[in-house]
Length: 32
Image (cartoon, rainbow, N blue to C red; front, top):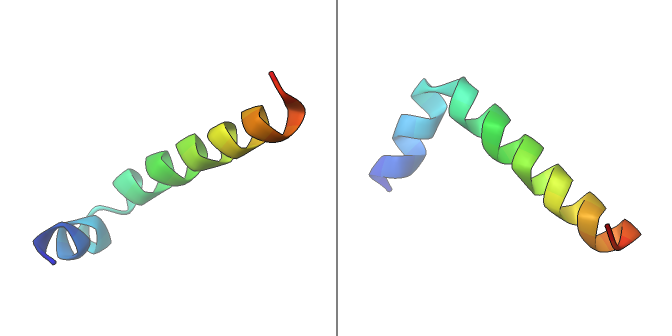
């Protein structure tokens, strides 16, 4: 679980992953 601890110490990484997830979900929903 070291990657989880690193993510909590680096909020920027979580923000990037969250944005990528939103883009992927949006692409799937709208068929872009």
